[in-house]
Image (cartoon, rainbow, N blue to C red):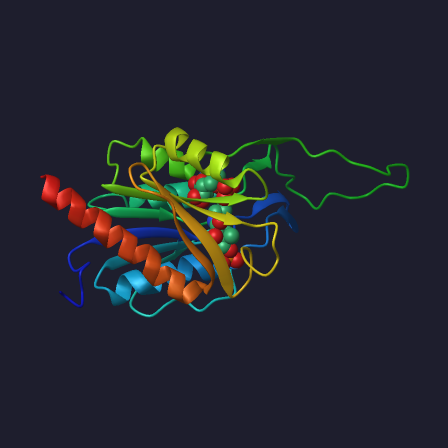
Length: 227
Ligand code: PMT
């Protein structure tokens, strides 16, 4: 077996949170650290792939020998993904993309006034990057998403598999603080269209990166056999 089974393959991975501006000094975001996505990128590179990592703002050093595109908002992430879809074989969406952004971004810092005790920010839906890639003209052969769930994990993961036209959905339970967002370890279940779910419990994100990439390799080998 080749030590670099992904040689000649291009893998595009999103990681980290997006930030949606409210005004020049405030934003809406989430607790994603980027660790999961960076670990997958590292595993893919070490197994021979050309990797493009599209990352939201995180405190991790850009990985060596990986093209890293830094973005801030969901719209910027979508643009960067679409710019890198040419000849892409595998797309993995591990970023925690903000589902909503502000309808209007204030040009100046929003001031509080003495007579207002509350304020309302109008939000509108962000584009769904995974679903866009899943239905894209340049759809990669293998499209993988995550499902960050706090309840009904299997049902929600299977729904995402079909609505986003993905080949695999990796579900993680983000209600448990020791796994999921900003932790060293994660527990995942990989759902795919035609095989049984596979679990990896309380495993380091670095090791999970290799398990996920190995699933990609098995999937791609299956496609080659069917050609
Ligand atoms: O970054 P870490 O701290 O290491 O944490 C890892 C993680 C918990 C963020 C990661 O494992 C994870 O679950 N990532 C997906 C988070 C998420 O946004 O899940 P979701 O169930 O809301 O979205 C489902 C899928 O659609 C995801 O693949 C997501 O990347 C994608 N999506 C969602 C919304 C959107 N507008 N565009 C998208 O592409």
